[in-house]
Amino acid sequence: MKNKIRCVIIDDEKHAIALLKTYIGSMPNLELFKTFNNPLEALSGITAEDEVDIIFLDIEMPHLSGIELAKELRPKARSIIFTSAYNRSLEAFEVRANHYLLKPINLAKFAQTVMGIIDNELSKTDGQGKNIKFFKTGEKGKLSRIHKQDILYFESAKNYVSMVTAEKKELVYLTLKEVEKIFNKDLFYRVHRSHVINAKKIQKIVGNTINLGQGYQVQMGGTYKSNLLKFLEEKTLLTGRV
Image 1 (cartoon, rainbow, N blue to C red):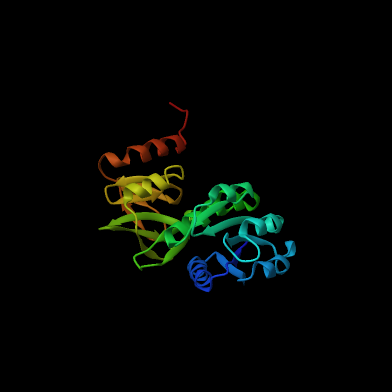
Image 2 (image 1 turned 60 degrees about the horizontal axis):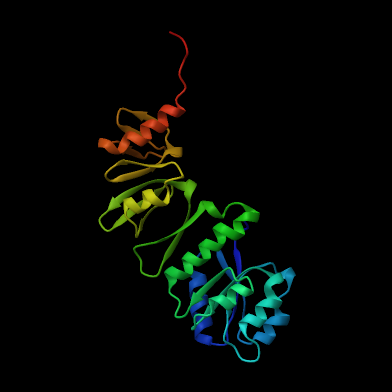
């Protein structure tokens, strides 16, 4: 996937544009390309050569509605997200909107919708979106972006978990149980009541100590290690000699 997802905002309300600007700025792989508060200007202001990925398009606007405008802009953008204070999702569906956000839009719903588009639409052509995740951190209103393959392990930390990579540790607003569910198909295993590890990062195991490289070690314990041991057995090369 290219480094930045190019976004356009079309809304006749300045405060709505300002809010979406803030949300886009909170997600490191998004970039704001253009904004329009006049739908007629957006008609000529966006071209296919702009390579727009996502348009955030208000439905209720003067002179030209978002529904009408979308019919013209659909070939010029890879995805459209309608925004509205009214529930008109059926009309949005008629013009093949990818998603629909009901105002007032909160950051969590915004991030969930955008990541759904990256994973399910944009990544079909450039193939890397599914390796990217965003996490709510301990800092209010902040989202942190991470590539799954960079994660060494998660460690419980009261109401949060500590997400550890070779470069940093960061508190994210999840439980270990939620981490297991999110990464259950990505070779992440719970090996201890306090740890979920990325099995792809295992360098060696000595007794119950798992070495994940970069000087990081995690202990296996109790019944949590059974799934990991099964995985290791399948990957262990054995001699056929007697």
